[in-house]
Image (cartoon, rainbow, N blue to C red; front, top):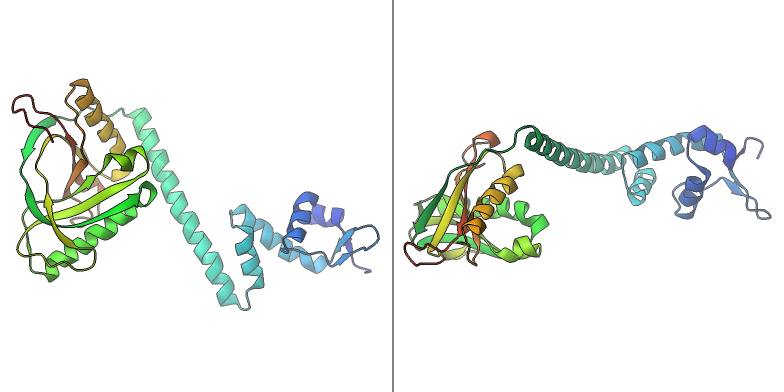
Length: 276
């Protein structure tokens, strides 16, 4: 090949290391134009440089090798752009999560949380419409959003009257073992028809220590920490699911700064002798 480039020259031209080029050859991502059968030397064509540049940029964006190969093997521009767009969407989601974590950490370091008031509350059993499932902690937020949306739709379709704010019950295993039972509910009046995941549900009575969390849920763990510390310090914590009430959430306003969530910890009330 009169215009062949040695692997060394191709490496310097594309800024892809010889080791990386060898790996791309082995996985079928960027194969040499020729391999000398006697000594194994690899040679590339100059017209492979643009392909190498595309690969390098896609890999710099964290695209898996299999997806890079799908981009290169795409028959038309539309198919190629679909693969790239899907990866960019994932990157934007990850970037948003990173920004949120950075903002939360910076806010914690610069503005230590002020202590919120904690009240004790006795709640009676309440009829509701609910969805219950065993969920993984990593999937909990997505499951929660979908389940609440389904419940709100069921309330409308079945002509039920919401009597109190929506809420959720979360088993200790969900926090301790990253997998456990979760239930979201909307207290209602009326006859609940079981449809799909939706069923009649009775929110159990409980004695609770309650604290309010204002704003988005990114740093709700800080409010949980304050409430849990309080319950343990006062030696009133008892076994039972943690509870949340969504006084104002995404179904009320898209502005996360306006959200208001009550976090409830099951406790023993010495004045009543009743546990959760």
